[in-house]
Length: 89
Image (cartoon, rainbow, N blue to C red; front, side, top):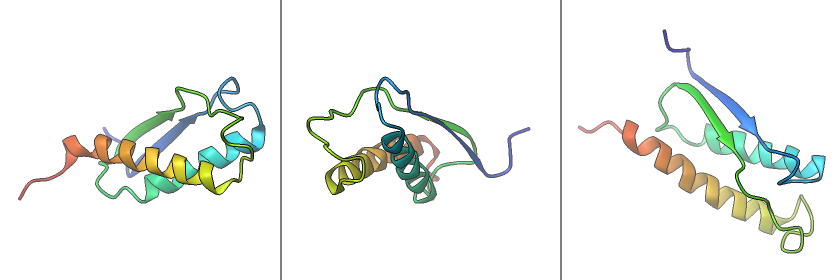
């Protein structure tokens, strides 16, 4: 029996985002992207950070550049995940 709604699991390893504030902000971005992806079917979803964010490129966890990069990648990821579930008329 599938769960009601969508359940979300987040994995942001310390080895990819060393600072807790960075991990927390990335999790917030992931949750926001999930809420803005209405095409995703209900069920259990897991999002895992697979590669690190370069500290030299993103100096602050709250930087606009990190937020934009994360949002763009998450939008692409959510669109790809929703593609098999899109209902055709």
